[in-house]
Each structure stands twice: as structure tokens, then as C-alpha cells.
Amino acid sequence: MMREKMSALGASDAMVSASRLHMTLDKRLRLNGHYDSLTAWRMLSRHVARHPNNLRTHAQRIFLAEDSMLQHCLKGALVDLSLSLNGKGEYFSRQLLEMVKDSLSDEDYRYFKKSFSDDPGERKKYQNWVNGSVMANGADDGQLLVEFTRGEQEAFVSKLEEARSCMEYGQLDEAINILETEMLSTPGDIEIEAELLNLYQYMRDKGRFDNLSNKLTEKGVEFSEAWHATAVEAKEWI
Image 1 (tube, rainbow, N blue to C red):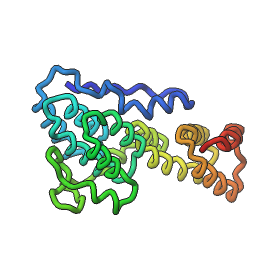
Image 2: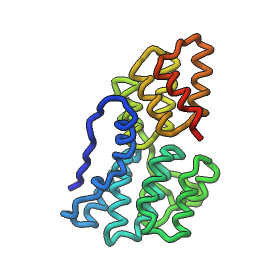
Image 3: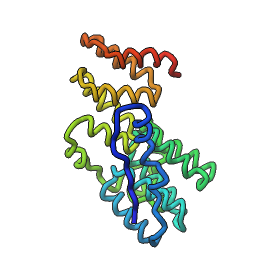
């Protein structure tokens, strides 16, 4: 049986956000050992095929292939993750790839680093079907066998909840896009601002912080003390 433990969202501070960002890659996502490897693999593979956006299942599938007699399927599971992320989730893919690096040859490791590129043309070269994949179509064009659905996102009651869900799955760029759009439309939302500032601090992304600051200035928005403090801190970001 799979054990998926997620901590409840706490106060919006940097430590809590960092914990949430790494939660999906926690060792607890590895199956507990009381299972038949092949049965578990088939179950996870069916779930990936039906719900390709469920990144927790992708991670569990990759860990299963790494830890069991299914290591020959590890590369296929990584291809499916690459197709699912579609150039997003840089932190998620980078950390997950590092966690299974010892199970890959140097050549395969370099291959999959390129497969997670944010350049569509470059990425497509490294998304061909290999044993274990349920999403690639077998042709050298990086096409999908399954269609992505966004039905789960329709249930979100707010943009903040949607952004937090993206963060739990490591999709930081998507979370920032959601929060930045919301910040521009409702600049007085304290929770949106706090979550966005936490992300900027975690990623040390001065370019995006400055860009949004300029847009807010053009709209005549008065910045909070927290925003001013982050602006000072951002001067040290590399």
C-alpha cells in the first residue's frame, strides 16, 4: 500500500514553504515494502496513464523502479515524468533526478537532465519511448499516448489554493505565475503577497521580483513593509 503523507499548511513563512516544496520528494513516498513489485508497478502505471498530472504517483513509480527488480523500467518512468512536466517543475525534476542518480549511468543521467529542459525543441529530442514508459508513443517526436486533463484544478476554491497545490508538486514556476497574476489583480491580498514573497526568497529570483515590482509601481500600488524588506534582501541574490 502506498503511503502519501502531506503536512498541513502552516503559517506563510520561508521555513514552512521550503518544507512544502520538498515534501513530494520525501523518502516517505517510497512504497513500504509490503507489496508485490510487479503488481504495484502495474497499479502505478495505470494511474499515471489516467492521471498524468499526478506528480506524486510519478515519484512513487520512479522510486519503485529504482528500489526493485524493475530497474529496467526506471528510464521509462523518467521519460513519463518529463512528458508530464512539459518543461515546468524545474526544482522537482532536478531534485528527483539527483535522488535516483546512482541508479543511472553517466550517459543516462546527462540524457535525462536534457529531457527536463525548458526548451521545447531541446526537450523533445529526449522524450522518446523506452521500456517502462506509458506516455510516449514510440516515435521520435516526443508525442503523448495519453491526454492531459485539468479537471482536478477546477475544484480549487481560490487561486491561492491552486498555487499551493502546484507548490506541493514542485511546480514552482506555475505557482509563481498564478500568484503574480493574482497579485496584479488584487494587490492588497496579504496571503497572496506572503506566499509569493516566500517563493521569490526560496528561488532567489531577483529578475521576477523586480519585474513584478515595476508592474505594481506602474499601477500605483503602495508596497508593504514585507515587500520593502524583500527588496533589500534581493540585492544579495545571485
